Image (cartoon, rainbow, N blue to C red; front, side, top):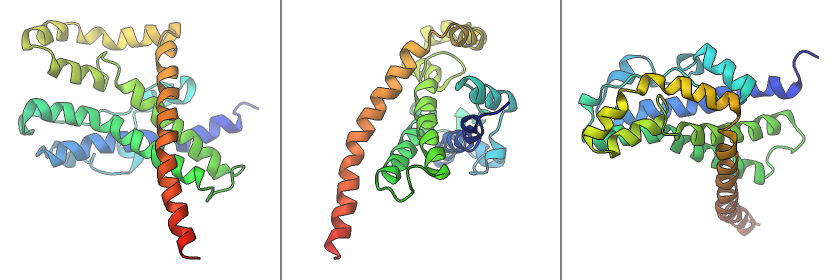
Length: 214
């Protein structure tokens, strides 16, 4: 077979993960006073508005890639510096939250474990974790670099920004060499373990409330 079932299931999982990520950026910017994402048609949960064909293909094939960046105008953000940090972190935060929600659904066994829907949901959870961790890498154009530039002294950030154009090349090299796997996979697994323990409390609370009604 040219495409395995696993590769086919990746498509809806990827679309859900990147849509949540980019929508969160747009929503955070809009909430902080920047109308740019709304005017650009990015304040939506429609996956087509956020797709970058090459980035999606990379995500599908090698599990790392990108979506179409949400345009923002930092001049609208109040406070500006903190606003950029909040908007930059919003995507990863939304991915982690979404992964936690999916994990709760899977734990409650609302959907049979051996069903296609459960398989897609599990993939979606992992893609959300990977996207969150990957985007926090402080290499341009990833979100982590925007946070780093705002936290650094202005002069230092300015000097580093001169090399921003080489960020994508560095990322491609690191991905090709597999170097990022040594960092991203352990981090994603560590976050999964934390989420697994945290969601136990929510699942227990839900089950407890259900039992009280019997």
